[in-house]
Length: 79
Image 1 (cartoon, rainbow, N blue to C red):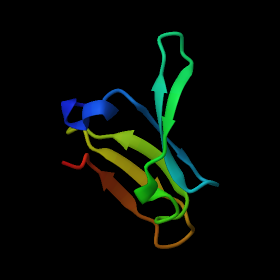
Image 2 (cartoon, rainbow, N blue to C red):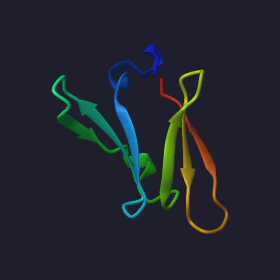
Image 3 (cartoon, rainbow, N blue to C red):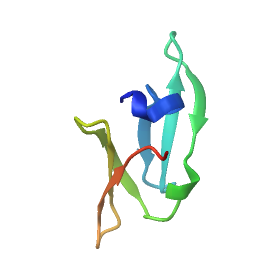
């Protein structure tokens, strides 16, 4: 959330455990999925991604679920 996200403002962020990726969905007014974006810099680099949540400052937090050495990733827009 927030204007700092530019074109990604308002997208729904979901994680895929098995696919080890983050998906950003554009949802239409009728509730259908219009577009799906998969940020390539997160695919397989951190293993299984468990959950995505937004922070009060607009950052996106994603947790990993690999069984050991799990992390909380803080994702912010790139300039």
